[in-house]
Image (cartoon, rainbow, N blue to C red; front, side):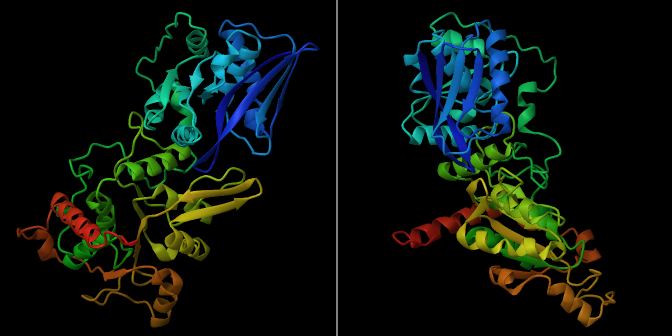
Length: 461
């Protein structure tokens, strides 16, 4: 009997469980059995691994092969176990020394040609491995920068199974050619699958940014007038207060909300790791930017379902908008047009700072501590204003429209501001504009520092 084992990580939300991948070879009819509660994509790894091993120049063992994933009671999903399965099989076949594999965690998907493809959730998986005491991790080469964010872990990035075999067998490492000719790397295709809707309303976090972290073209100085609303945005950023902007279309509600993330302080290291882990699981990490250190911004469309807002899915729960906006801003434009059930589902995340999703396969917990900004028209036609009388809605229609926002939800909103239209004279005037994003961001940072000093030694922030 030949036996070898190595390790990988099973993700449950943004939390990981280290899984021991064991391979056992016995005399008998050639067969490949995979046990340990795998899902469909993991069961298919049998064919991927066999083809990858053969196409990498190694010999596939013609014996009875059993691969076990332990603990067997933990559901396992995804293709991130391929690399560990292939290594354990090669260890059992004595192509690799089994003693070398025992203390290594391997994460990655295998192509039929032996190339190692990245998978979602590399950062939370490596964090789980580090917490379990493992110090060596093997990941796809293009995800090595993300895995290296975890301190105290030695990361080896490989581009192919051939390279991994050579490193573990102490042989010359072959060079893998990369002929893209200006095309996107095909290895990254599975991380940003179009049509999933996961990135709806997300700002490009990898966009060019100033020293204060705001994007080009999104400056508070562009907002004309609206002194009270600008003050409310600054107060909301300084005190982490939820904000409700109410006013007719064109008054500048969306402009103000889009500029709010830029005046928030940069994320500290622990917060950056939390945000990066969520975006890694969702497959939304910007290429070439493994660490997110600025406040995210998420603005889902008003047709979004409850699952799109709080997270969920038919089988594996995915993070929703409240988790993608963790440590950042969640902007709900045209709030009364959202489903009442979806809006009421925000109550628990607003109070607890996390969302718990229960499915038949288990319970998933995602972080969801965000700053919520609501925007709404004052009436169904949207033309009601304090400065004119264009609205033709009846008082009963206005009451019904405003009643779409429940009292318990509005009770959790600290600031409520009426935003009126800017007059033509204000738009055409050459007078001084309001403070820039950089100036407001400095005041917000100073206010938070004063609050932190005042509340030092208490559980309050």
